[in-house]
Image (tube, rainbow, N blue to C red):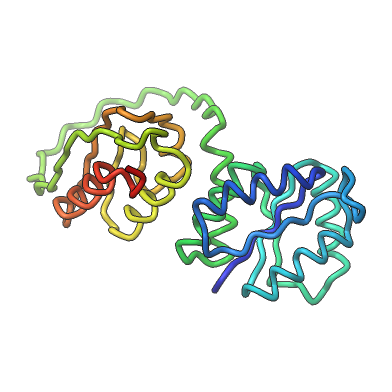
Length: 239
C-alpha cells in the first residue's frame, strides 16, 4: 500500500520547507502542501486541504495528514467529516508537524502502510518528550535465586568510524543510513543511537570528522557492520 503525506499549515512557506526536508529522506513519497488560504495568505482552508488530499489519493492508496496548529487540526477534521468517500483512505496523525512529517515520510519510503506511517509520526513526539517519573514500587521479599541457565552467546561486533562528510550526518545521509540498517534487519547502533531511526541519527548532531562507534548484534552482525562502516566511511557519495 503506497502512502502520500499532506502537510497542512497556516503558512505555505512553512509547509513547503517541511516538504523540502522530508523529500531529502523520502524521494519516492508523494508530499503535498495543503497550507494557507485559497489566495495564499496565512490560515487554513477546507478547499485547499481537500484539493491537496485529492491530489494525494490520485498518487497513492492512502493519505496521512499532519497539521501544525489547533485550528489547522479542526480544518482537517471538518474536511474529513465532509468527504465520506475518504473513509478508510485518509487519516489525521496526532503528531508534531516537522518531526512527525520526517518520521512518517521515512516510514512511507520504507514501504510502510498507512497504519505504520501514522504510528511512525506519533512516535516522533515521544522521542522529544521527557519520560514520566515511574512510581516507586513496593520492595518485594527477596525470592530464592534460581540456578542460572546457560546463556547462548550472541554475536556482537563493533567498529569506530569517522564521519567524512564536510556537513556531517545531516538529513540526506541520515535517511540513507536508516534505510540501509532497516533493510539489513540486524540491530545496529551508531554512536549509541538506533541506526534504523533517522530522527535518532539526526539527534546525534555528528559533524564532519566526528568519530562514532558502530555496534551490530545477532545473526548477520558481521555483514551488517561491514555495510554500515563502508557507507559512513564512503562519505555517502558526498566526498
